[in-house]
Length: 273
Image 1 (cartoon, rainbow, N blue to C red):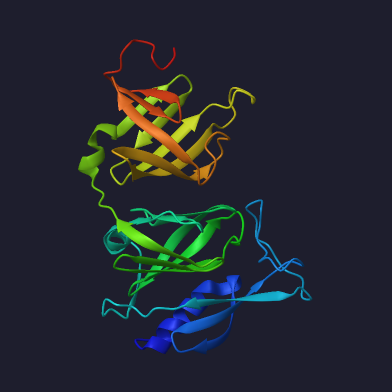
Image 2: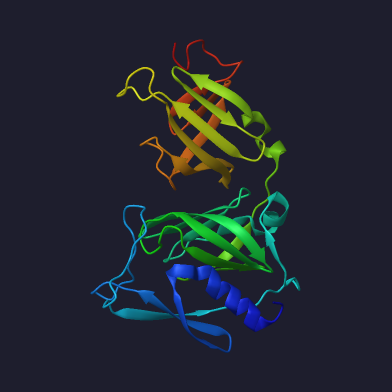
């Protein structure tokens, strides 16, 4: 378990259906990815798992597999404590951007679309994360390995990304003014101390007693303030993976242009009847 070959094997296992390890050499693994007839790696476009025909051609991508650099070789589950040193952003590049949040929710933006993952386990410097929403090259339910060492962030999966990592700290004190329950006409929002934001609103296209639409996201630093990234949603304007603006002023919380009032909101009626 603790040697370098063991580390490579764990990452290969973590990739699951997303890749077939064909050969392991010194410091690298050659991975065969399913591809369509054009030679482009296949992937879902509707958030559902994809499959490739048995006769489909394959392309190979070589990715470097780095060994853990912390001296830790054990595998542990993710929690607020174990995920904290991984929280941050892999900077913009031509290939994409990766955000690792304090909830263990991971967003990967590429030109093909947004993928949302949930961290499941940590081995040394490597997170194994399950794909919970996918557009583009990733498959629902597959696993992706993410290696974070110092300022280097490497996403091992289709496509491999190698980015400069910028950690950010998170504390309930930093979002203290946002915490609590907020409401508007037929809608509500709750912000909790771990940075989670839960939203509920009526769907006026359905009967009055129909279940409300809901969405859930996590706060991440953005400029001098915060941005909300959605990881669950049945609200069309708040698609999974999308960034939503969030701002507070005059006792009114505004999320994606929609207002939610607190006890000190003014003027009266700012959030509807």
